[in-house]
Length: 178
Ligand SMILES: CC(C)(COP(=O)(O)OP(=O)(O)OC[C@H]1O[C@@H](n2cnc3c(N)ncnc32)[C@H](O)[C@@H]1OP(=O)(O)O)[C@@H](O)C(=O)NCCC(=O)NCCS
Image 1 (cartoon, rainbow, N blue to C red):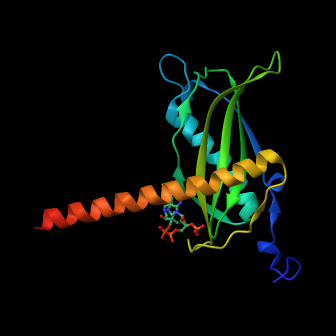
Image 2: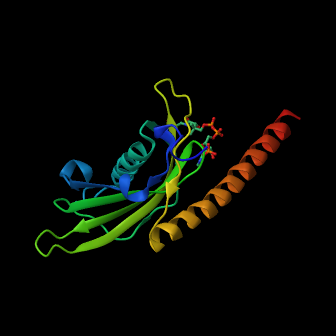
């Protein structure tokens, strides 16, 4: 099937078509008693920013399948302007890896400081929650190609880890039944 004869929904898409950016002012309700943004709240913002890019790429509903390891590199304070940038690194069959980077922007100087990032996997679904195929990503810049390759390696590694955990759980169930 050529790209021209493919369903428009599944035609390959550039990374730039779904790249997203979201801004949030950190409010007291988002913070701990020291006035620093709660880690869980930052993860919530990362999830929303990641879903924006995934929705735009898949043009469907999506669910979060996983969020990988996240480092909180520096505290974020009440009143800070938080910027989250997301892009789809690679699409597989029904899933997509999305990278999200979080920054604090100093609105006086205009400078941005990187405060955390994560990779998330979203799965495209229809209104009834049934999985849907997603269009491929076309990486163009060197950076996009590097992220595309990295997404393939991370998928293999996380799949191997999931298989290992499933085997362990199955073994533990078997042991407890004996
Ligand atoms: C994510 C979910 C749809 C996967 O369903 P499943 O029946 O396990 O599906 P499969 O094993 O066939 O996997 C479907 C795709 O998801 C990917 N996937 C499944 N679990 C994953 C995980 N933990 N991490 C990354 N990718 C995952 C698979 O690699 C596969 O990708 P592909 O189609 O591109 O090859 C299902 O587990 C689910 O609905 N989870 C709840 C999602 C949710 O509610 N999220 C909000 C947080 S509460």
